Image 1 (spheres, helix red, strand yellow):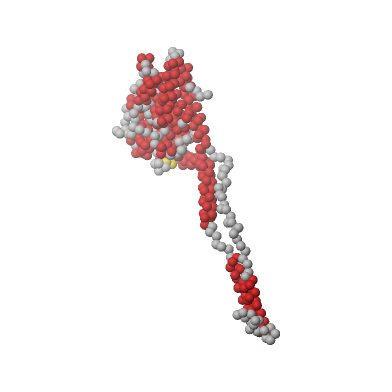
Image 2: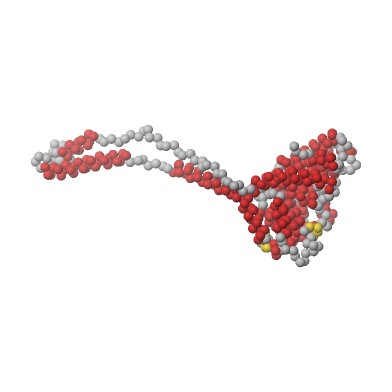
Length: 440
């Protein structure tokens, strides 16, 4: 039986409806409406999840406003029921709505898991930790099941039999065996027998000129027999048969069969090939987007590019272990002597570099395609891809738009993993059908 996360918020006391089931029903209807909205606009998954995960989100955030507007449709007097905007209730509704949508839409499920993993690492949800653990576990299990089907390599490949129907045999009912014209042959033999026959006759008599008669008889008989046999052979010669149509049909059937066999083989080995490519990439430590070795870059530059390069190599539906693979790959980079603060940097400086440094241009270009201009709580991709000013983002704006405090310290592996998850989220829920199809 599917869990209802609204009830879990009630159980831990995060929201209090004073035991009023009527109010609970209004919240349920609101969550249902928001889930329907999310299915129509999957790109809102990141904002819904980030707001739901942050107890300190501003009451004026656009996503909070949208949830409040939806709640008012079900509960007209809600504004009088609370002294202020019920952010806690709206967060619970948003999480329930996202889970409902994620259960029926794999793309939303991918976006929820990646966004929640990022948001929960930098928010204060200790009272709700168990609720979020259960929510992420349920949806991540669903995502991994989908990813396993795309990454698995079957032990055996099955190919359907060749689909070909041979042409019908040629009908032989109208065939007639050739016959010898006996009267004509008799006439020729009679003429060859002596001077009593019709022309051309044998002018010699066997009694008077036996030697000449025998020679002339042999000549005329050989001609008569040869003409008869030639006539029979001509009538027995087979009529020409046009095989171009059945051969073309057979060639088409064989071509289709081979194409299906190759497609089955390619699909069956795609997962193995993908894993092989990832191991090669990890060992080579070479960035195809920057055309440079990660070892020649600073750890934070390398980690950002590794997030981009890995995102380009894996499909949207990838197991959760891919993020762990990236984290461990980044940790394989050697530490630089000039690293500050034990290899950590604050988020504000990382975002500034991402918005301004030349090496991040490929990342910014993709982020601009994926994410809209930042309005309210949303991914860092919006800030990185739409850098309209000098690149600096003040602390209050950064916190309001991303939910991450500007002073938060990140290691290179933290930074790379964070960016990778945002890229996976954005591609999964892009409003453009072409972008969503890519890398599926």
